[in-house]
Image 1 (spheres, rainbow, N blue to C red):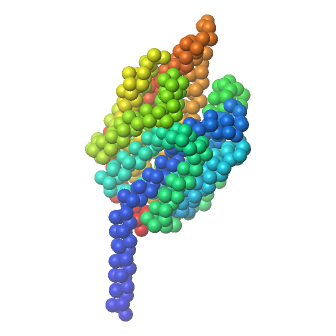
Image 2 (image 1 turned 90 degrees about the vertical axis):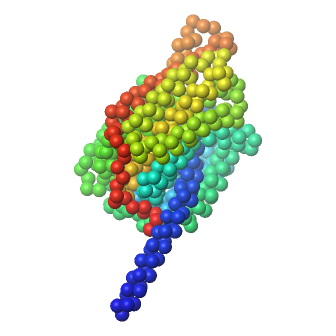
Image 3 (image 1 turned 180 degrees about the vertical axis):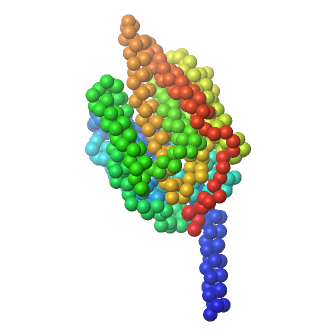
Length: 501
């Protein structure tokens, strides 16, 4: 009897070790699946933008309605991220990943079949909802799969490169699909990407039961979801009205009250949606700040540089997308160097501020372009500098923001990173669009409406946005240098690869 029990126990241990070893051997395939899923979420923020004029013509909706194709996605995505992270912790990351992928693909197919504006906006809203479940699950799975310091650096370097370059890839892919296929393919392509990711996730990921089964913090869920919705809506509303519009002001007031109430509730409730221990760490807080600033500044570079290349240089949508390739190359290079070679030795404090200072320098340089500048003479070199800078920001920030998080907090911590980037993008959209439009109007005061003057006014609006983005990055560099701690990051011995069991 004792021998049988020993043999059965031994067999169980052997089986567990075999399962663990198999999952461990497949971790780089798991990274591939997660990178594909993350790429789909990131590129969807820009791929549809390229197709908007064509979609508007096909579905006959107005310029005023056009912004809602973008805003509907960002509203749902940004406001539901923290809830998505909590659901991921509750139902298990594999379940959250597959549900998110399947839902995102279904919404994309629905949007591709849209026959009117309402169908398209509804599809984009549903995309944002499932994206809010998908994005935290991806980063949480990456966090809990790679816990070895050396391998974690490599994995987050790849993830950071995908996250940073996804917007530019979306521009390239959107331009190619819109030009050579149809605007509907900018949505349909998600079905293919999701199918590949689900096909890889099903056999590679072990089904986990979830790590946090505490009761749901209803007050926290409602206050943070509605608060983030009001915040993103307020910034979106600025684009079509003004900072003085009563609905804009009302949205910001509601957001401030609800988010303040949310943090008050988190200090009082027994099972908070966002345990404040997650954001108490200085390195994590500094990394979240970096993602927020990068979200603001990157918008200035992508949007207005796209305008400059298409409207001033006369580039096609495809050529514009391809023109961003040098930036992607620089980003990929420094993401590997910073996360694999430098971060384990020196920590995030010198790297993230350096990246922000470099981004500021690149944007200051870019602000010198004129109506007579060429791509090679005025854009290429600063674009490379900005790409190199982003590699120093994104990969170390993603890595540091999730380092040392307990497994049951991984989903919420991952959601915070995505929320910071999303809110930053919303701020950038409203702030830079408004200031750029004001700069163009001021430039035309006392001048005749000739094509030359209008072209110069447009370029002046772009360079104003570049200059403001540069100052934002410079301020972010100083703030990150103050907040982040010195020294190499400390890895928690207690962290376990949840998906490997």
